[in-house]
Image 1: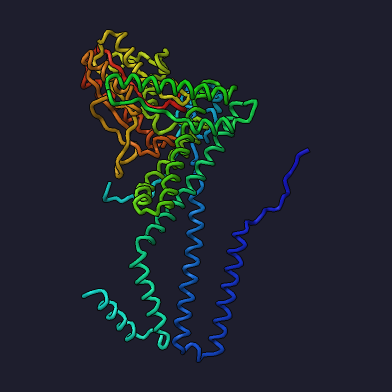
Image 2: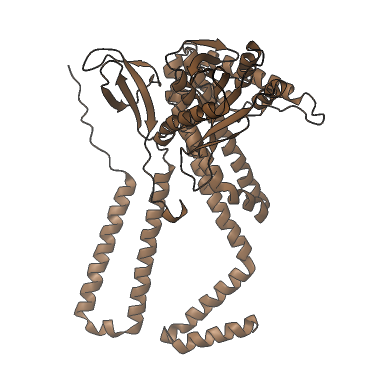
Length: 139
Length: 380
């Protein structure tokens, strides 16, 4: 009998915090906007404008800090880039490019050719790196 | 204008602007607080910023080190099939150290260093065999390399932690500053080792194996024989010459002792070698492209220097010229899975070698071509 996993996906607590913060901020913004619209004299008060600007700056800083923490957490992971193995048939020249498997090495005899069933050879193992934008004037 | 006058002028300007009306005094107080706080505690604040930066990197280093340890133990369990849990043995292994020989009297230092390195190598191999009894020679070599990469990560972490704690304890700006300044380079190295660790665990070819790859491509299809120590040599006809192609035995993680191998081949041919061409991966400078091939003179080999010394001694004895072909890469590329640019550079290096052979030797000459580097993931 085949077993299937039906465990519900757990949402991490920090995602809940971000959702709650976003909802709270949205509600505050809606309430503030409706108050200003109902009391036009408030918009004319200089101190109210300053406090509003200060609040907005605070929100921007909080969001920036949140993204900083997130990017730091992402940086903590060890990246494992995809490694490519290239297998070539000695007889018909058929080339198969696949993901690296443990035990592969350059010049190892591989599995029989998909086309002619002759012996194949691992001719290349490498990783491809997408270069970030280069300073063309420095190269 | 002195500081007090400058302050008064700034205060006047702020008061004239009157940004908060009756609350403008709050801004003035805040301004004074910040001014005096930075004037008196500026250096201390700077130090705390540096400490936090080092602390952040230390957390990352700890994470990398712990992940590396986990991968190492899992690989040992998977490949080595040990009867008991290898964790304690791995932890003990990570604390191993090597004391370099005394150099007050430098005569004979190379042989003392070689002896110490041989003892270390034997000890590490024995430890790996005890940890992973089911591993074959190739797997044991890969495990040894994996453990060495983890040892390096463990050491880097401990050194940074030492300076971080010392800095916090002494509150000395200069203790913290010296580690904070070189931290980006150290982090690059640690990330390279983390990536190397995975490559070693899976037996993938690494950037440092560029020289070995060139030798493998040149000698593929020709008969090989084992040669001291952990190297193979193939006799290959090339452009009307006879080339002895030497590389470390693969596909396990192994650099061999090319110094001994080259000496043996030279002695076997009674010194009648027209040219030695060495191919190795070399550090590139920032701005240089990865996989660039360059040519020069000298024994292209890294490591502690024992093999370079032996090669130079042998060359001097018979006055054999030495040429070098290098494939450029940075420290991260050298120990992480081989990049496509480096793999492609092997063909360019072969072209360059053939050019050197045609230009620097005559038909019928005997030459040695030595591909230096770790043979992990590269067969022959």
